[in-house]
Length: 621
Image 1: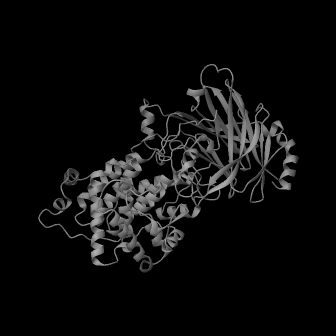
Image 2 (image 1 turned 30 degrees about the vertical axis):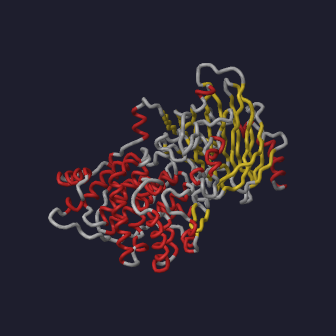
């Protein structure tokens, strides 16, 4: 830490030890507005279950004629679309009926890497000549998804005119078709990857259909074969997002391939049903993952381009859903305009986020109180605070489920002060697979850890076990020094069954955004607490580039930020014998790279009857 930071720390130790600076206004402040939310994940609570997997009334299939219903029913039973569309003539020859032009642009740098012979996935490059395109190839999950989902077509299209990048796209597609001559099993034939692949083939058809007639015919046959496979297997997707990708590809095939009207009617009904079951009441996908939220938006934007290509009016539900999905995503945007690290996601760059939002055409403000998706956002001055105020996703929705309940991220201007490690969903690229499970644990997030245990069990393959089942959240506007300040209070029961304790967290962000007061409390879950003591640690993972130095009494720390500002962290006088320590940490940046960082750790022993640990994070000078 710099000498200036050390001097400032010594000078301000006296100030931050005062009761005025460390006392939280929990009862004396004037409450202006309070909204409370109780989320119960008990299986017997039908009302809560409906809120967690809501079928929105706006997304019900539109009424259709009896003939359309009969056609949809017959197609679902297996009657060929050509017979239903035109029973008195021969099936029409395979061709594309339109050329979609998606407004969602790819990553030009990744496209340039492709032209240089490297497939870039989350910042890690693999030589194209050494890639195995077979469905059972021993590739890591991110590379399997990239190879078989064909998302790289978007990046290639963004880096050069079609004449320059088309031959490479055709060459790679030919390799893939040779390795996967017919539908089968493995990574290539999950519903999600098959749906994403077929949609990418349609949207970027000019790149892969500009060669010889024989090659074009083979690609068209592969499109039809994939569409037929999805017709039969789409309901076997691993989760609702996979189903949405599969149904969207079916609808696109119904729009762009001949005699496709029966397939389109069949696909639209399934898509609208899957969309209604994909999101919570406020528009957040049930996996609670920003990456999954972005994929859902991208798929729908591409599907709308397919409707536009054939001058067909899309169901109004598509626009409704896109408009519903955008505000929750913006909730997680920090002061640097990039996304925070939640549910396995790393930092998602501002450029990537901006490109996606621009493609939607939706203009929206970030959601603040997303009680169903589970994130709370507070904007004050030039600071942003985001709190995870919900249980982890249910096992059937989890993708890279994290035990992050009551963790928070905090930024001031473009500088991130408190972060989560993030990056579990990127494991297999620059993030080593061996640390994936650790990145999903409670200790990898800025929250309290009791007895070195996760608040919710972290299982293999992204799954989540038992732990947090209930979260109470209260959002209050209080008067602080004559100005409105936002106070969040939340409590979870993740440690109640094992240790008989509830974790309550209170956060109060000042109106100018330069002072964050916090308090972590352990409370007995029953009428009386147990005897003895238990170890705890409250972790504050610091943003990349922050220099930290501890105070002499180990009750505080000074933080020197890359932008030249200085902050101080200080424990309150009621924290018992707890002390502040410094430990190594890591943070996954916008390029998917793990970066070495530091973390403040408040450690000690808490009575099993409960404990109170107030703290203050304040900008100095």
